[in-house]
Amino acid sequence: MIMTETTAAEFTNIYSKIGGTKEAARAQRFMEKVKIVPDNLSVQAQNLKVTNSVGANDIKIFGTADQLGIQTLTSDAKFLRGTKAQGVDFDAYLHPPVSLTGQ
Figure 1 (cartoon, rainbow, N blue to C red):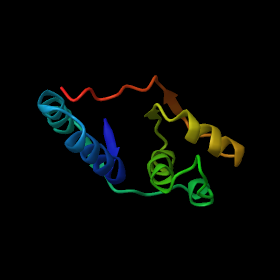
Figure 2: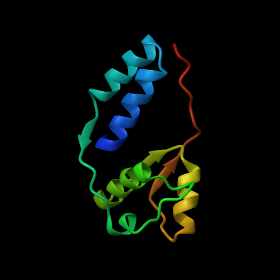
Figure 3: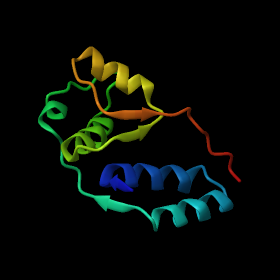
């Protein structure tokens, strides 16, 4: 499993601010199993416009996966709808959102 630099920074920020002790420990164990790769956007991602539903960091994340030819695991349906409206379909597996519980 790989993760972009932008994703790793966002993930670390989220679990360090919101997650509880057990969640932080699980997140650290998870991160030990993930390879971090530099952001490297595909051409079609570079041409996307930032909007209310299409964020700059999301463009980096999905654009890097697109450049690498790999699927993205996400709960961000809003982003996928926003890019589709701009004519870009990313290869993504959409899963239900899961919130941290502070545990």
